[in-house]
Image (cartoon, rainbow, N blue to C red; front, top):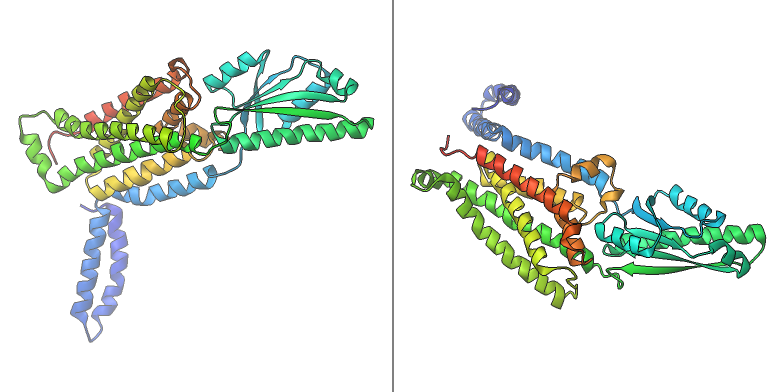
Length: 397
């Protein structure tokens, strides 16, 4: 049955029909045309879920893309090691704090602490001042400072290091103007994880999450909805096999295919794109398997909500893939997004997968450094699959 509000819309469309009926030619043809058009509107508006997918999803995507798509780099999490602790270092630190690009989140006492924070994903940039920085600057006219940059995202690493050098250049020019003494601050830049600044180090982990969403979510949802649409689901449900086993039997082939694709991606990454696998290969597979289960659960959830393959494609394609590409950190840094979108990105499973797989694959972090990502994905899988099984009906209405 059509929704009540659609009757007013269809009646409004029928008003020109009265005028056409008064015409002396082609009355029957015109009225038939409007009858067919009215039937098509009834067909569109009778399923509220499809209407919402068609109307709401584009609006949401426009809002997300408008605010989230930005190549700007902001709020880079920064740690500072200031063993000199003199007026010069304090002024430089103040300039970094006043910048929108850097967020000083930690003060450390050694490079080893910085390395640990990088592995835990708590910082992306570290500033290490030389001992007796001000003394060296004014007595020898030269002082050194070290920048350690997480270059697994080459764009963010390059922008952050260039801006940090500009901060030093501004301070150096200020000292030379005030004291009329030629001084030089020498920055030593160390690019972690990706010293050659290859973009493949960044997009390979994101591509893995993107492919799993396509294969697991989209194909699983379409496969189950196709059974409903063609009527074969009734035959399957009438068989002695439990409905739960029917759904699982459809999910397992796509999980196996996804696992083979994972192996292919890893082989191509190493031998074609020359992206090294720095972490434990076993934990990479386990972590990827958890994300595959989440993706399969999303596909099953979509299939329990929609009734047509077109709606399943829209929901899984536009509803899952676009937010995944924009809000997962695959293409754009999450730190540069508004706070609201950063919060929304927390419910995007691909965000946690891409973050974890980068730590293991590119940074060589151990499983103890991705426990948060593993816990979040397991919780998501439990909730999504639980809701999907509850909504799955043993009889078609």
